[in-house]
Every structure is written in C-alpha cells, then in structure tokens.
Image (tube, rainbow, N blue to C red; front, side, top):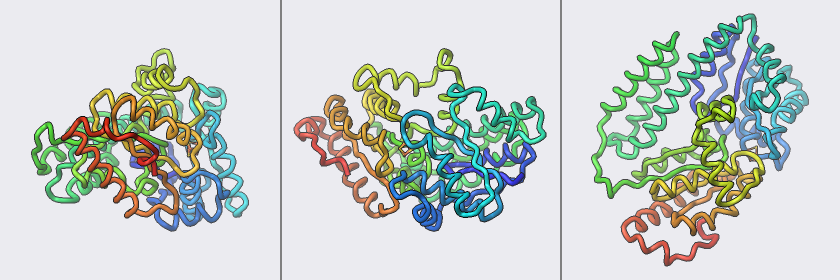
Length: 376
Ligand code: SF4
C-alpha cells in the first residue's frame, strides 16, 4: 500500500518504520508556499493554521498517489479531535481515493488504537512491528536529543550553516540504521561530528537562554514558525523547546501511573498555581513549562500559537500574570499564512534586547509594568 504521513519536523524515522512494515512510502515534501496555499484554499476558513498546512501536505501526497495517510490526533475539547474527520471529508470532496487514519492516545480508546495498528501493520507479525517500532523510536529519541543539542550550540557557531549541514548528514546516517546497535553507534558518531564544529566561547554571564512553548505543530514545524529556533540562534541565543515527537509518544503511550515524564510534572504545577482546567491542546503543559523555565533561570520565553487556537488563547490570557509573578519576559507570537519572516525577526530582536538588558540590570523589568505590549 502507498502510505504517507504529515511533515512535522524531522521525519526520518517515520518512512524508515513504514518501509520496514512493507509499505511503499510516499514521502511528503517539506511544506512550501504551495502547501500553505493549497491548505488555505480548501480548508474551512476558521480552521487552525496547522490543519491548513497538514491539509496542503495531504493533497500533495494524494496527488502523488498515496492511498493511506497515517497521522496522530488529539483528544480533548479543541479542534484537534476533528482533524482526521474534516481532512478526510475535504480529500473525498476533491476526488482523492485516500484514507486518513488517526492514532489517538492509547488510553483514550485502547480497542480502537489496536484495531488501527492491525489495519496498518500490513502482513508484518506483531513481534516484528514491536521490534521496528522500538528501533524507530530509539532513532527518533536520539535525533530529538541531537536537535536539542544543536539548538544550544548553533547560537555560537562561527561559520553560519555548519550545524544545519551536519544535521542533514546525520539524518542520512540514521536512515541507514537496521538495528538498535546501529542507532547507538550513529548517535556517538553524530555527537562527535557536532563536537568538532567550531564555536565561539562565551562566559556564563553572557549566555542568553530562551524557552519556546506553544502549540505542538507550530513549535515543531519550521515552515509554520518561520524557523524561529534558527532565528533566535542567529541572534546568539540558546533555545530549548518543549515539544518533540519522542516526548509526545512517551507522554501519551506510557500509563499515567508509571509515567515519569516531566511534561506530567509541569501539568501538576500549572494546575496548582494557575488553573485546574484543561481546555485542550497543550495549554496546561505550556503554563507548567513557563513556570519551569522561570524557575530554571531562563532569560525569556517565546510562546508560539496558531492564529485562532483556542487552548493557546487561554494560555496567552494568563501570560501577563505568569510574567509578573515569575519576573520573566514572555513574548507571545501568533502564526498564520499572513505572517512574514521580517515581522517575526523584528519582534524577536526587540525581545532579545529586552532580555539582555534585564540580565545586565536585573531591577529593570520590575519597573516595567507588563501590559499587553509584549503580546503581538
Ligand atoms: S491546539 Fe490549537 S491549533 Fe492545535 S488543533 Fe487545537 S485549536 Fe487547533
């Protein structure tokens, strides 16, 4: 069967996994302006930005003959729970013969989850599915760790582009792995490759660290966030983001009782300090991560949300209070098809100036009465 999936950050392990299940993979192209235009044209107008970019990708893979699209869904009260259904209707309406299969959290409906596993496993035995999943997951986990390392070191790169070039090579190295042993060996080689890249040395007090929180697709897909991590790195800022695929999988697949993921701990913090209600998406998690970044001494936080995203609008309404209580600058940016790269760049530059000045003169921020000014 010709199978595809949405493009969302680094997708190296997805095609590896599906190929090992015996599928012919229709590789989704990295989203471009055409992808966005297609999504905007055929999506209901007020649907959220990630829905539109994903729809554009689905149309592009359907045009290439994909018969099945495998994606993850969301439970809870926001629009994520409707993505699969509405994507399917639009594809049907456009005359494509492509089925969309959505995997929700295992604990939402275990029976339905396993029914879907059986439908996509092809003729592969369940033991082999587990084996490939475990190798593929290790690949994703290690690549996420590499990406996190790059988001810190790239802030100090001497020759612009060295880290991006290395990451492209690293992805190809992982793609050749056939076992966990290969993955572990590749991870060692990848780290050695990154450690050889020349970087500027900075004193501890010169480091500027910014945490990125927000809606998962906008955080992970650079087409949706105007390459925000890279823009910040290019301003000499270390970046830590809170969402990646390996964390999402661990958050959703490990039973809550045994789940030691920090994402669950920060949710408890958010509930204790700000709001007990989950309105969907990653709202509580994001509030918790903001508290966590402030407690870890970060210099600022950037909150990324798709325009019109209900859960992140709720988060945004609490941001002024968090910023005041925790004495940390927070910039909230809203992304949609109208946003321009220059717009994001200008706001980030102004925000980083603020964060740097606050670091030099710690009393400065307390004098500044935080209003909606930092929300754009
Ligand atoms: S979290 Fe926001 S952007 Fe994502 S599906 Fe829900 S409403 Fe849409």
